[in-house]
Amino acid sequence: SAIKSAGNLSYAPYPSMIEEPAIESTGHFDTFFNKHADRLLVINGIDTQTNGHDSGRRFMWSGKLEEGYPTIAALAAAPFPDQPMAFISNGGYDFTASIVAPVRTASPGTFNQLAFPNSMFPTDPDLLDLELVGQSSYSLVQQAREERLVRQRMAETLPKRQKQMEQLQTVKNSDVELQSLLDFLPNEVSSGLAGQAEVAIAAFASGLAVSANLNASGFDTHGDHDQDHTPSLTALLEGIDQLWEQIELRGMQDKVTILIGSDFGRTPFYNEGDGKDHWNITSIMAMGAGITGNRIIGATNENFEALKLNTSTLQPDDNGIIITPQHVHRSLRDFLGVQDDLDKLFPIGVEKLDLFS
Image (cartoon, rainbow, N blue to C red; front, side):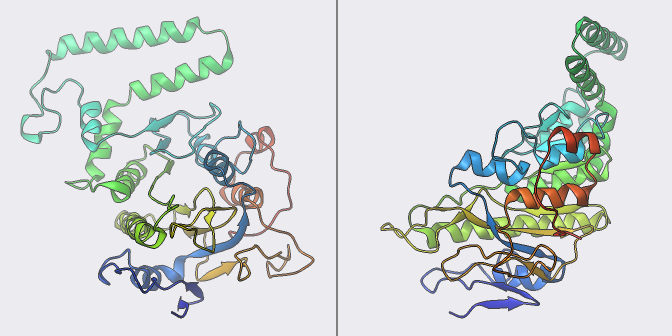
């Protein structure tokens, strides 16, 4: 089948032997790209220089193959250590190098339990006021807890440990703030990536969070690639669409930037089991605040090998360079305004490319 397009973006058709998702699904290629092409930036031909899952995730989300560099989401959240949920993680590469405390989310009901810790029925609005202990006793518990945290912080002698204890105290004293998050959650939070999106945007809208990792799986299709990969792509695109719907619902289109990527790509050919194995060349998509959409940067040849790019024009150029995740993160840090001290603490020494503006 012929390559399809939406605006200036090109995308593959579904293989003829698989059943497409319903066209009404926001995860159908035609539906998704026709809806979002005007806001999507696609960067192709990114060389991850690896085919290992751990190293690929690390390189794609920190900009370094070597261990020890924080995820870009942590760098974005680092200036806001007093936010109780500054950086939300749903898995994937979420190493922070202790520059911010990650909050690993659980089921939405957990937020009710954290927001109303003294309620016997924190998930039932009609019974919310039934307390486990009387208010005077609960106040004593809170006071004792805070005094214990102060003692623990004072006992620490290392500045880094003291900072971590301060962050812990901030999180533990955030019952009231968490109640505001519940006001922005849907009555029933969705499952999967869509649910992660709903929680993240509720946390942004309530002022509790600054950045978030959302995580989807099901793409390591070494066998029966077309049959297994298609539903995973459908769920991914449905989740991204729900993320954007929540952003629009909260009027945050000019405040939230989305970056979509994976640890590496898949081979352009099939193996003996009709699967596709690991391939070092990949792509990313970006949309949202500050992103000019309906654009493609970078390219590959018919063998899915990256083409060199001119560093000024960003057009294919035999005398140019191959884009790596380092280039992506150098540009991304400039775009996000990552703090200068953190940029120097975790340096990325490559050419600056104007990828995102």
